[in-house]
Image (cartoon, rainbow, N blue to C red):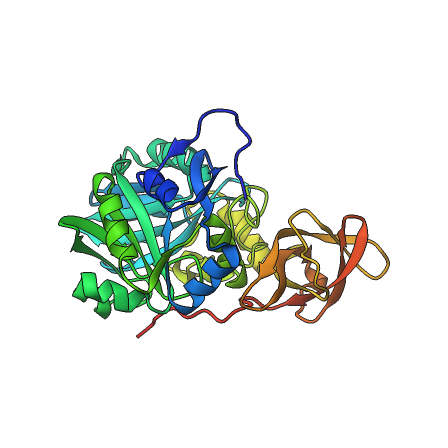
Length: 377
């Protein structure tokens, strides 16, 4: 699970003491001490999120405000996504690309109104992403790092019921809506989104009020605290990428099967084509295909197939690699994602993963493995 092997002391989120008091097993992750699980254990936490509501601390993520009349157009110069026409009160998934068309990070962008964008980036890429935005956008808009805020995620089918008790206006939100609400007496930014495939919310709260909000949420009968272990198995069942594993600087959005995220106005035949790093390479890949693709993988045995496992064809030739793999508690079976030669990317294709030197039959499968249940109204 760890994104760090450094001996330097881990940073702490504003909820560190709460995690410890709840009996969490703390591990280093992206430079932070984070809860990997609580005494209930990963499988029960996973199942509770699928059936009730789970509370996740994601305060290690980076939060940034871009403001000014040119903020949307400025950000469009770094992502292959339509930001200019993103409506006020809506959020969109995006990726930062490099000159080779590779993915530097994936991120969420919300139009917060008043010429301001609210951006959330991954913890492991936070310093790089902030420097990237400061370098390329500072002349066009204000880049403000919101390092005095925490981020909580409430996920699961009961999340909407819980949030409606605390902030009735949230009941009107649909998937990818974004708004400001008052919780625990302070202004919070909330989006109806998440990283589990379930309905839910992500809540940006001032750091000094984070524990009060977490305790208020945990006091609701439907809510339990959930650690990084279940966060990983939930996102994998939902077919969602983890940066540094399923996405990296050497892999393009086309190879990553993220073509859905490349907005039509920004494509070669769109209203505002290109203009972001690596655009011409990405256009060429869209037109002429790529040699490998990210796919879902279902091991045909009870053996978990982990990241790094080689994928071979019937002749023993390596045709790919596993980038994420775990047991899927909802499915009751192992699940994985990885990259295979494009000719072998069709669902139903039988291949083999090499696990500790032994062959494990796997089958290419569509993702998500578990149906996504985002609330679209």
